[in-house]
Every structure is written in C-alpha cells, then in structure tokens.
Image (cartoon, rainbow, N blue to C red; front, side, top):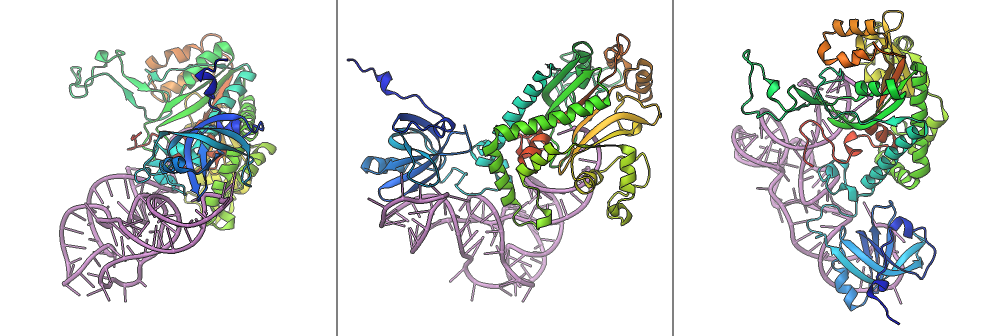
Length: 488
RNA sequence: GCCUCCAUAGCUCAGUUGGUUAGAGCAUCUGACUGUUAAUCAGAGGGUCCUAGGUUCAAGUCCUGGUGGGGGCGCCA
C-alpha cells in the first residue's frame, strides 16, 4: 500500500465549523491568530480566532522541550497553523478544543511592537489603528453584522421583485440637491485651462464638462423605476460637507429604493417593513455577535447613571420589531413640540414657536425618545425646507416627504413621493434656479408616461449604528472618510 | 463652519493651593504552578509628562501659539 503525502495533510477547518463538531478523535487542521496564551508547567492553552466567528477555539498544548521553545513565539497576534485532535473539552468554558500535535508559526507578532494587547482598548485608540482593528472582538463583530445586513437588504428586495440598479458614481449633474460635492477632474491643477473670462475651461477636462462624485443615485433610480416598476440602489455616496459629528461620513453607503405606482403611504409601509426585516435577519443570523456587542455596550455604560443607560441591545431590537412606527405629520409634530415641557420651560436650545421652522435634532429626539418612545415617521413637511423633486400637496405649503426617526441616531431614512406633474416640477426647478440643461432628462420622464412614484434613502451606516449599539459612525465602516481624515 | 473638552509608561488612567527621586492596574520580560478561561502568585525593566515659546527661585501642574484626538450644534443619510 502506498501512502501519499497529500493523504496525510489535513485540510483546514474554520473555527465556526469546528466549534459545532462532535466527531471527537478526528485529526483536524485549524489556522488563525492568537488572542491569548496561558501556560503552566506542563500544559498551555491558546485561544485561537480566525474571524469566522466571534468565538475562539482553545488549543491545548502538552509541553515538552520542543513545544517550550515554540511557545515562546506564540505571542498575542501571531498567526498559527495547528494540526491536532478534535477533543471534548475538560475545561468548563467550552465544549470543543484541539489537542495540538504540531504547531506551525505562520507569522510572529513581536509583543514589544504589536499594539493590540489582551485587554480593553479605547475606540479612539483603535480608530488610529484601523489597519489592525479588525482583529478585535468588537470590530470583527461589527464587520460580520455589516455583512449580514448587506446580504439581508439584497434578499429583502430580491424577494419582493425589486431590481438592483447600478447608478453612476461619477455624475455630470451638479443639481442633485443633497449637498456639497467632490469634484472629479483630470485637469492639471497647477495649470488650469481658462476661458476668456477667466473661468475654468471644462471642455478640456476628461468628460468635456465638470464632473462630481454622486451625492445620491435617486434621480437615475427614478429613471429606472419608471420602466422596471421597482428598483433599488445600494452604492457608495459622497458628500463634501464639512460635517463633524458622530453620524456623518464623507463617503458612506446608501440604499435607495424607487417604486412606480407607490404613493407616500406605500413608501412608508415599505420603509417600515424593510427595517423590520433586516433587524429580524440580524436577530436570526448574528446572535453571538449581537450578544457580544450588547455586553460591550453595557460595559461601556456601566459608569452612567441608570436613567442614562441604553435599553439592552437585543431587547431594543425586539422592541422595534414589535411596535408599529408612529406616523404623524410635521404640523402635528409642531403642535406636540409647542406644548411640550422642554419647550414651555425653555429647555430646548431652539424653541418651537411657529409653523415652518426646520426641526432640530433635539426636537426629533424628544419626539422619538421621550414623547412616543419608539420610531417615528414624520410626513408632509413645509415645501420650503425640502428638496425640489418632492410631490407638492394641494395645500400649496407642504410636500409629500417622510423622515424615519430612530432613537439616538435620528434620521435613518429620508424619502418622499416624487412630483410627477411636469408643469409643477418645471416651475419648481425654475424657481430654485436649477439649470434646466442639467435636468432635461429628468424632466422628460414627466413628459412621457409619467406616473405617481416614491422612494427613499436609507443611510446604511446609521442602520449599523442602531444594530450594533455603537455610537460613532466612524466605528461601523472599516475605513471612515471624514474631514481631515484619510489615513487608511 | 461654530462651540467645548482632552493629551502623563505599550494601553487605561491617578498625580493635592506650582515644591524633593512622577505613581497604579493591565501589557512585556524572568521565575513558580498538573486543565487554564482577559489564569494565578512573586519579582524586574519601562517616562522627551504631545510640541514650541512664556511666567516663576521652582512647571506634569499656570499663560500663549501649534499638532493630534474626543464630544455637542449646523448641513443630512
């Protein structure tokens, strides 16, 4: 009988798979990074993690002379390949472990230089070590939850016959109306071609006109919806606003469904159904990670007063699933705010005293966290504080807008029924001095076969904030882009 | 963009009205320990007190500028 070398090499099994196995006595191979090592005279324990799950597999090493030298190089953060026997654990912390027979060090991690130690690190510290923070429990848990949510979003829409559309990242339209844009150019900034009047000659630029990164795929999304009925986009979005908050990024991911034949109520139904669907998906598929994140949050808040602490994470997610979102108009919200205690006692920084003012985040938080104590959808805002494309109501004052407000993070969704009437839309564009030349194609959809339609934008990172209990949006995207921050 | 707070050991932080040689926990290293769970116990090493000026007999501590970071507000998703 011939024995080939390849028959002796056992294929790698991921930790999440190993932890579920019960065929003890089998030869296995596992690869991963060392989280901690504990050693006594005759035996050492290595907690190994490969990112496939938040849980580690325990490697048990019987110490002999060879192993002792090798164990000196098994430092926190080192990468190992371990061959051994899958065993039922004698210890109390886990059911499955690996009795090591052979350990290969794939990559060392010098403890004098490796910044991650088996202890708590601050989120601020880890933000400055963004290249290594995936290796922590918190950030690997967030990455897995984030993946699950990407998948759940696509599944939700796919199950409902929505088509995913890739809208452009580079746009020639400078009138998307959602904020400051990043310019895209191949012109030599040290030697710009000029027109006779001194302005920049964009005819010499790559596209022959000025170009920007998209601030929204909505306008293009509408074009697709007015043929395919139900579409959604899920892509990167860029805002050059100088925003310095825990809930703004210069580069973020946005989900934008757009539906023909949907009015504002259909739109709200879809938004609520979608949020509940993905939250349920997280509860069903991310149990271990959510439990870890819940503990992390409670630990973080243990020094807070009891009444300032957040609701337990999983309880909070269930609560959102169980309760219908409150729906009310802007006008009704103003009434509630006018008569609210903090308004009467002048505790609001911005007092609410007249119809037409934009709501501040303190007002939104009061409605969600104090008054209704659950997610709120506000509708029918004054036209003057909303975008040009929103459907105008008969009252001549308000538009069919909706904002979905969540506790702590505020606006998670902004959307509206769109103005499908050509004359009304045209008049609005003229009134706001939006150049018709950049909007002609958008306007044409209202000329030919125009129908009522609606859509919204969901800030993906804000959703992840809510699901993970994290408080800074820079911690729920692997490589955050914010003003003066572009290190990784 | 506006307003605020912070910067002391690898990490998290303490450091009194300005006053002798700047401390603790964890991490690291050495030793002990027959199965540990961020192991435990004993010991050791480790500091440009962010930076540049200034005030003072004397500055980690007070003042000014700079740099880096946190939080709040605005813009929004």
